Image (cartoon, rainbow, N blue to C red; front, side, top):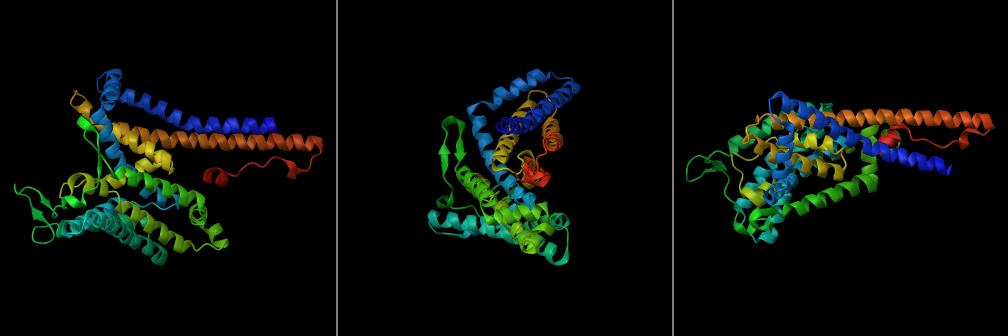
Length: 386
């Protein structure tokens, strides 16, 4: 039995490593073919990406971008663990950043009070905006995908109206940029001085804390267990006494609250105001990063770093004569390869489990052993939940 357990552990370790390795190899091969199809040298491209991405200023840029992308990935992953597709993260974070910027520009309080209020305003705004989709789903059966997509458009319209000069926005001195009132310097979030490489945003600390809370709540609490149970089977969760509707609404609110934090690194550490050129599309990037990280906090962090690295290095490739569309191609290839690789490895693992069960049953029957002494093998849902 000890040898069998050792063999199973080795197989589990092999399967855990096989998926990312297979995805990386497949992504490199496909990307190489794409670069070759453009008439460029893929070896030179990869070499340039590694050397440029290793520079100190690039490392700071990647970490700053990864901070925002990580929060986006966690916001999406909360919904994914509930089998909910919160497509509205982009609208939730932009609306939250807008109202947080308006509040921050109007406050005259000390930073130790103003900064928490700004962050709290962003989280509450994101949670309330996401709650609309959650309430529509549990009360009227409206798909959260449709509801959140529509709410994205509404959020864009609301921001566009309120950001006009004469409403809550104002023109800069050049008359080309519309923005909210700038935050006072007392409301700036702290940064780490990296010398010539620039400044590392201090909000990376908050992002790390969000990851720890996400891991603890979903993996070590009854609430997290109930949330994951509803995501696997709402009928089984209801039979065990879990309020499915309450969990759906709660998970949407939590996802929206985390989404409200996405714009805070940019607002508090960089722009210090919400303007018409505030980053868009970050919520959709979070979907790809959550898929890359398999909804695990460490995996999401690695996915966010990879996304920041690709954005930094492929933009540099454009100045080296490579096609600017190469970034989108590489990102799409990586996401597809990861999804396909994990699915192939999952199916292989399930097939291996079935083979082991069959082999153990055959041995037990030959020896006249009762079936209940055969080593238990996790079901597909138990294996996925792990």
